[in-house]
Image 1 (spheres, rainbow, N blue to C red):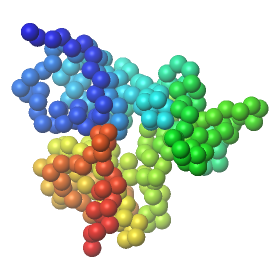
Image 2 (cartoon, helix red, strand yellow):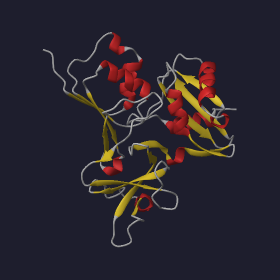
Image 3 (cartoon, rainbow, N blue to C red):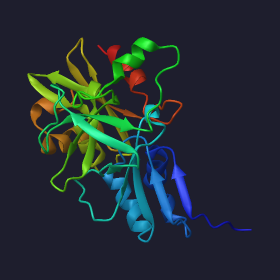
Length: 270
């Protein structure tokens, strides 16, 4: 008996990327997928295009949201064409939820400028179990509201609005580094690495003690080819100091790249 799957909720973009990058569609193409919703880290545009071209009539939905907002709080239905240089927006909030961007001065940044993604509304959890100090650090009074009590959750994620008014996830706040006198988003380097043909997955970490950017990636593409490609795309100060190819990217139990482990490995480099 054959089952017709109309909706697929995949917990991590890693699974989607694995399917498309390994050439699975050369052998079989799903016939009955109506909607594909994906969540977790940024879905590389190159891999998304493979899915979209393979399943042109399928609806694709990009979801965003930390556990502290009860799973997901934002969604974006892909309804237009995207170039290889773009990233998929995370869209707008669900009902009874609101997204606020705050800069380092707790003000709303100008359009196109970075700000921390903050969430308010009924989706917020009560905090961390038996961890009041941690709870009070990120579940705080809305600095834009001095009239009545209103909690917001500071996600630690950086975002901005593009020229279309679409909200984009840019990077984690703690992935923002100061290197060679420049403020750099490690996520921006990763986006450019993922654009290289043949790259299946990529992750950048920063070795603060040695002042080095370290890039890990999964692909048959040589380290030299990756370095040459990045030099054509990025300014010199953003080029990784170390580049290493991996057989597979280490993941956390919830399917995200294990950046803590990669950073630990990078710290052992000479």
